[in-house]
Length: 216
Image 1 (cartoon, rainbow, N blue to C red):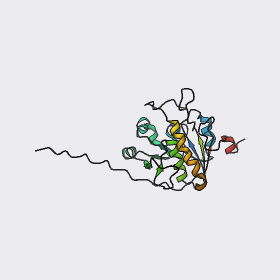
Image 2: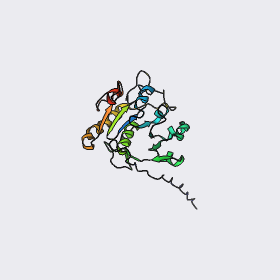
Image 3: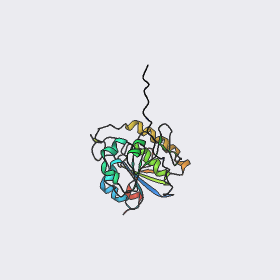
């Protein structure tokens, strides 16, 4: 008589989070991991806007409102990040299941532009894209980007070096995804300004942080 193998029980999904509209009409800054990012830039935005730190950016902005990380492996590499005091949001259901305190926000990997559904992200194939969508869902209507180089400078892809697995970024595919956001902005009543020096991401207006925040 043949042995019938039982399938292992399916992993239960964590509770799906819904982004609260806490930043209605405000300015938000999304801090990426590009090689141009400096502590001085991060310090300039403190207290002047809401802040989403992406991946390792929490190390320069431990006071940020939100830490956004898509990748399960990143949470394994950065044990200290789980004590981050602000909101911790992830695209990874597995990470949210394993570590208490992480908000799970699933994503649509194919939909263009930004999601208007507070319980769903549009992914754009990279966490910088997802962080913009997150800031929009929080209610921000002006979003400033720093650390969004979208290219390697010399042999550096990030201000902190490389991730432990030395994964390479697919900048060309990512840039194409951002174009779908730029086309949608008028309908959303949203402005996005790229304040990343030398950025390859050119579908949004470029400016300097001191001009955006009228610093003298």
